Image (cartoon, rainbow, N blue to C red; front, side):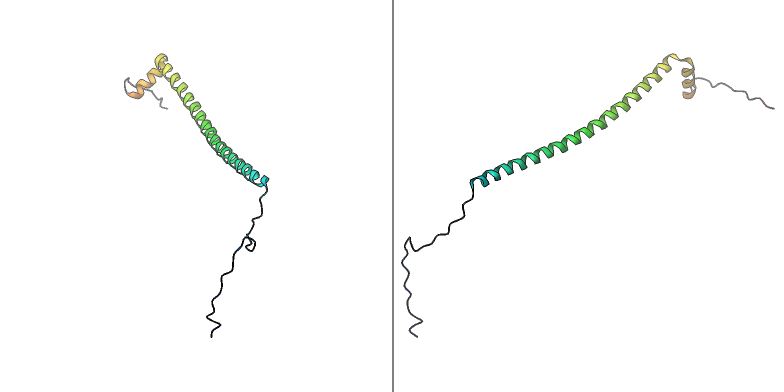
Length: 112
């Protein structure tokens, strides 16, 4: 039983007896390569986002151009109608009859 209770002596530590783990050294180019890779990835993501926004803007521009063209055509038709309402007596008479401001012409239908 005396063997179980024996005191263990601490080892004497010296610089020579302690083995330190040495990390494998990373090559210098690996650090620069990592930095360059991150910079390229940032540039690609920024350019991709800018491209997406530009495509959205182009689509919106095309829609607005189409809308402007249709509104311009409608405006020209309305201007022509205004001109006809001011100057063409047949159009004036027709619109007056439509609004009930002028008597309607009686149309006689021949009977056989």
